[in-house]
Image (tube, rainbow, N blue to C red):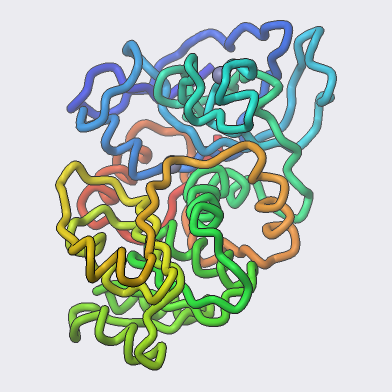
Length: 342
Ligand SMILES: [Zn+2]
Ligand SMILES: [Zn+2]
């Protein structure tokens, strides 16, 4: 089969002809129909984030059709439309048994530590496979496996309650899902903070109140728009010390700031004024959980979560096209998601 693989970091991905992966007893072999290109893949290619042994097939946002199943994998049959949770886990350790497989002692990531979805087929453990509702396209299903699910996890970590206000820092791919999911979960008002007018327009079209941070202090603006109170929940989806600090400063009494953007740079807050005095909280958010997918997919099925304006481009399983899409992501970032449809 064809696979687009990382052979050497810092170099373009290469098309390789490799065998269709063997199907273990508890595995499901999937004919891939959609594989999303993610910003993290760009970091794997450049070497900024490390991956497993090379060569490695990238791609962790996967949807497709079941081709065959191992003898012990009985939940699926050939022809089922499915999508894949990329977090591999043992299912038995102290974290797995509590449903927190992102901290599994033997955890690994499909498309990073094991061959992923930039290929015609993938074999994955049955426990990572979910049915994809007929109403959700393969392209949207694939995108939901990463940015949407991480946004959903962030809102769970924030313990969002109906009637609360939410500020989303970063109106990119994660932000567009966060806005829709927060509204679906009953947020009274969702504010989108960014400096890109096009992203802010898109955020508005999804029902958020846009705040252009290049036009003035977004914290002051959030306070003004909440009658001086500050927001109940702030999601930081960018990974900048500045916006991390702003997400905390924007909180009201009992506010929760969830940090999902990644940076290794520290940020400064005043414990007394920013946290203690308000009983505010700063919460870390990493990946997402299998248990969150049923409701996420149901939101997708009902159109509460609609990625039509986010997943705007599909390309074939071609090394040149994939590298070009990654180059673009590296240079401009942006909301628009490209999905490979092998
Ligand atoms: Zn991703
Ligand atoms: Zn485990």
